[in-house]
Image 1 (spheres, rainbow, N blue to C red):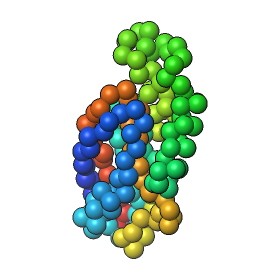
Image 2: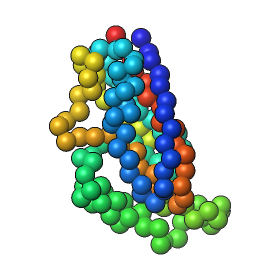
Image 3: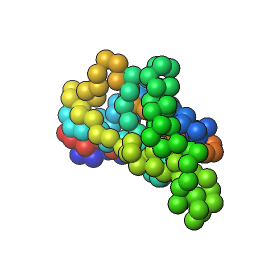
Image 4: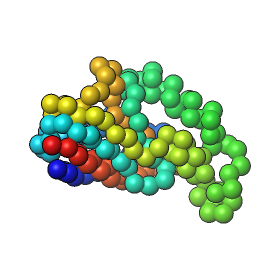
Length: 138
């Protein structure tokens, strides 16, 4: 059995990090699947999905880490070609990845106590993002 759900979010860009765990949990509850896997995916090349303890300190630490790995202030060939100034956004999103899979058992995602699912928008402007949740199992 496969169940698919989607939801939209407005983001601020610039490393905006949004806890989407409640949205994904709602999709899982509506899906009616007890055991399987939950796949969470954001289309686009400047946003990512990951897990983290969604508290201000950990989120700030992750954002700072990504700024060190792919600073916005250096030269990017993407910016030279397209002139949109978001080369760093593409690199950061590629490092993090657009999606993840979470095991599902007894109708519950097997997340750790302090583990939340977050969407991070690395683009250099606000965006409307769609998140797709696909639940596969029985």
